Length: 128
Image (cartoon, rainbow, N blue to C red; front, side, top):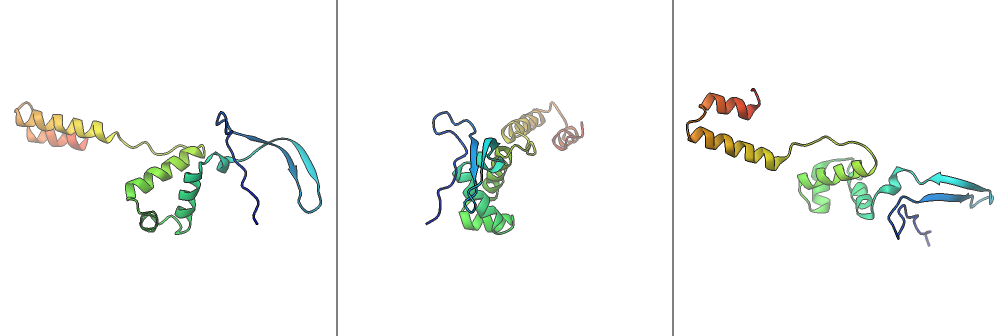
């Protein structure tokens, strides 16, 4: 029977737990102090499960999509969440909703004749 896994978060307040004592199962040596559990213990059970599913196919998004039955954007989103939980920065993706609204506004201005096609194209492509 395998030993239970160490939890990384307090079940009461969800703060990061610290290790107070380490013991060697072979020779009985004990170390006492305040030790960090490490970055991986900041992941939730779902995040660890996703990470294992991501690592098995060596990060191939298509294989992860198939195994978990999720879309490519969902794979990317879950991977970004794991990266952030490990304490790293992720690429900032543009706010898609704000971008869609900006494009609608440009189309409205174009249809109302307030801007010309060349100006609209330049604005969409970010040339101005």
